[in-house]
Image 1 (spheres, rainbow, N blue to C red):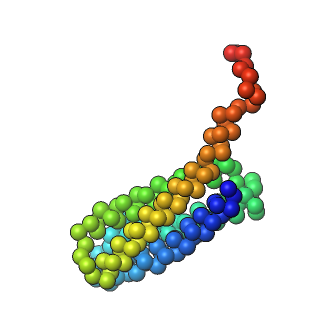
Image 2: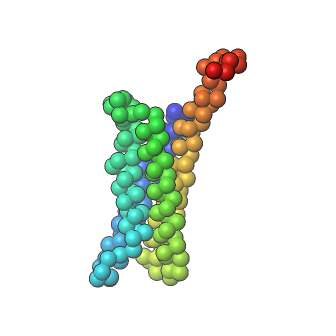
Image 3: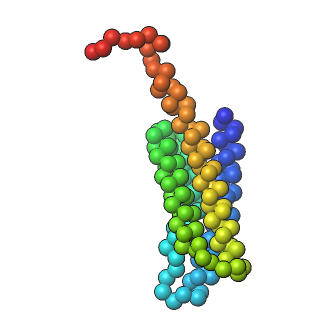
Length: 152
């Protein structure tokens, strides 16, 4: 199962790089044409890509090996759960904000960024579930060895 999670981590990194390139192009295009700001949802998807590449994935992948004091299982799950929520809210909000967008080149770019964001979210949900399931199974087994303990 560790190999499956490692493969999914590589896919997550690849999807984050692709999403970063697509959404950076879109944000730049919008900033060149709009004097005051850009879409907040596009900026949030840009943040998610950077968060994933430079904070979440390095922490989740490298801290258990190189910084075991920082790699508490609940801290790792917390970062992963936050990343799941970030990706979900980012791709949904950008899809809503651009729901009536046309059929231009930059329109296709933002639609692709939304799709890759959705796949990124699905990959993080998969790794989150794969990491939570052993914890739940171990917790349900308990330490009593199957014998009922007296109530205290």
